[in-house]
Image 1 (cartoon, rainbow, N blue to C red):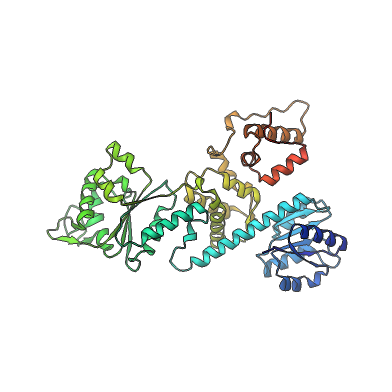
Image 2 (tube, rainbow, N blue to C red; image 1 turned 180 degrees about the vertical axis):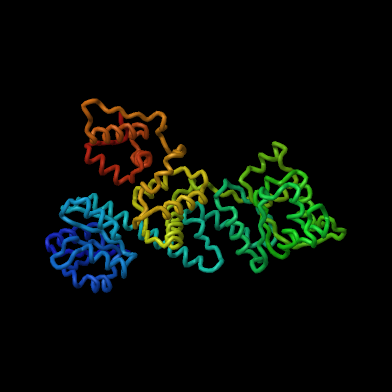
Length: 465
């Protein structure tokens, strides 16, 4: 399906030229030369993108833009003008313009801006589809991302979920979504209509662990509640229990848990009667339990009891294709929460997010977007809105060490073009001429890097000496 572009400009030569170029780029194009007909043209043509001139004969394009924001907020509007005025550009962006182009329009810049708009539209579509699927309490498979890697994993998890009793061990770094995968397993299992109970083993004091898991009778120990307390296993009877951070349980509690898993029976603290439960057990940990067994920190027999089926969740840095969709999803969530009108990301901001190391994984990404949205006053998140990320560095992706970077400026000054050219050449040398890697190091899109190289007369075949 072709993207549809509506040009609103009263200059016939500009319209004809743009239409010819956009047709070559395989866009479907319509032209509206009368500002008064703009609203009808949008309703009839239903464009994906609008190119709007700021200075129209009878109307001010900025006023039209403000009106469009009320009725067609989701359509990106790219403003065009023949006047090189920074203040006008700032005003247009603040009013909700997606981007800004100067006449005469540079073809490469036009292609870059349109590509960025298409990416935003596609990502917005993915987020809208995700939110539609997630209405209610059920978790859609797309909640975890749309990359092949994560969807293959989700497909495996769905198959394992069909069993009513199979114990599943979820391993992965903190923030990779183990808890959400556990809920997803429960919702896709035969036990879906019964309880889902979770307990964080690292958050309960050692002396209270047995009471939390199996409950206690009245007066079973000093400080016990004055009535019988049901443990998490009893509360989950008929459903699913998630033992989160299972690797933090003491060796004494591991013995008691092992017996409960083997026999599906246990005693409340202070009780004489044994209790039987029918519960499916899921366990999660950010540790490698096999290594913990070898160190003597985790019982081998319990490990094999839990490890009937193991799911290893990949860190976010190993599935970077999911970052834009997840980022847009969180952007939409927090824009609504904080009553903001953010419509997307500046291309440089998305590049930064895609190239960041994300040691805290999806949880960290969500927190970063929340902070950026809360502090933003614009209509899109820009690279500068994530300046705080640079403080921690990005060691997993950077080829330059901050301590090694030096810039010496001669007393008589230096031209910025020379600085840029030197920087690009040194980066290309490090990446052996690989422009994709060089673009990542410099925090640019590949198209922007190529544009800069053409401007500066840099030609690269394979390597740069």
